[in-house]
Image (cartoon, rainbow, N blue to C red; front, side, top):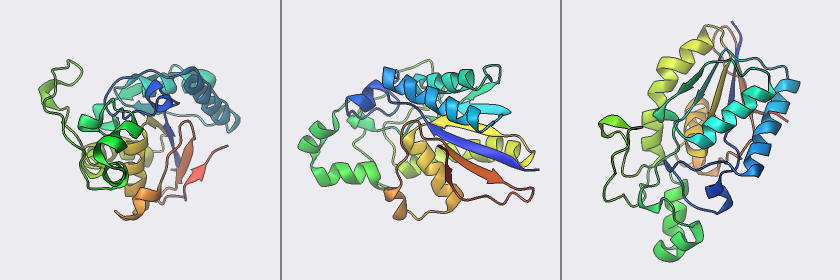
Length: 222
C-alpha cells in the first residue's frame, strides 16, 4: 500500500529567536513560530494530505506546532504520540548559551564541530536534575548527533515504519537534529555529508513509499 511520511521542524521558538542552544529545554513558540506552523497547515491542506497518526516530542515547541497544523488541516481529532525519543539533541552544558557567546567562550571551530559533526559530543552538564517528564534517568548530560540518532531510531523501527508499511500516512513534528538524524538514516547520508543538511523551521518535507516500501526522493512542500 502506498503511504506518505511528512516531516516538519517546529516553528521558530524563543530560543531560535534569541540565537540560543536549546536541546531539551522546554521553550515556547514565538508569534512568528505560530505563523510558520499555520502556514505548514495551509500547505498540507492545499495538498489534501490526510494523516492517520502524528508523532512529536515531549517539548512544547513541537507539540504546539503539531496542534496548529492539525487545526489548520481540520484533523485535530487525530491521535498524537509523544515520545522523548523525538526530543531535540541534548546540547549539554551549551544549553541556554547564546551561540555567539559560546563561540567566544569555547572558540569558533569547537562550536562549529559540536553543532555540525555527527560524532562530537558537546561539554556535558555536571548533573541532570530530576524531572517527572523523564523518569529512570533517561535525560542525558549531553549528546552527539550520533547518540541522538541511536535513541531515536528504535521509535522509527518499532512504531513509525510499521505504520507506513501498513498504508498509514504519518506526520512527524520534531526538531532540527532528530529530523536530520532520521533523514540521514532514510537516505543513507554519510557521517561527513550530514553536516551540510539544514532543516528550516516550518518547512514540510514529504517522502512517499510504494507497496514494496521503496522510498521517493525528498520533496519540500510549498
